[in-house]
Length: 141
Image (cartoon, rainbow, N blue to C red; front, side, top):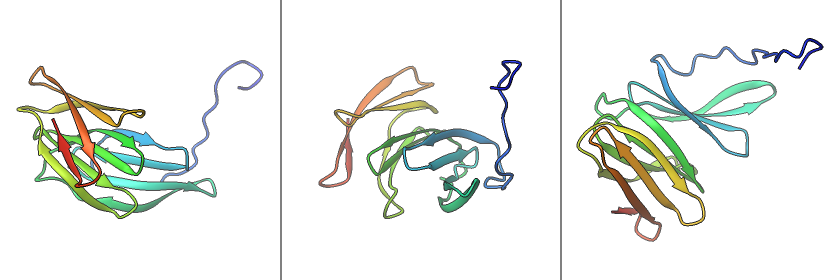
């Protein structure tokens, strides 16, 4: 804060990472920022030397928006306008699991870090609880 008790924000990067509107952001403790957009694209960037540097990306899912993101260990959970949940292995940069989770848009995802349970909610009015089985890379309802 400055002397007049106003918060000051400095622009640190003006990189164009997405060409479409950004729908969600999530970050970890290692200066990694993950963002999604309404084309379904997910971008993984690092904050280094006062700049946001794109590292990798996952392309969209049949034109459906990626509405929400959640991190668990080295996994990224993503919810889509199609009602699908997808889980990505961030280190290996690949999708490891996908389920048709809801009948309508997935509107929110959260992960319980102690148990690894994934909660999803949707415009279909349901809240679902999922377990990521790391042995066979599947989601169990």
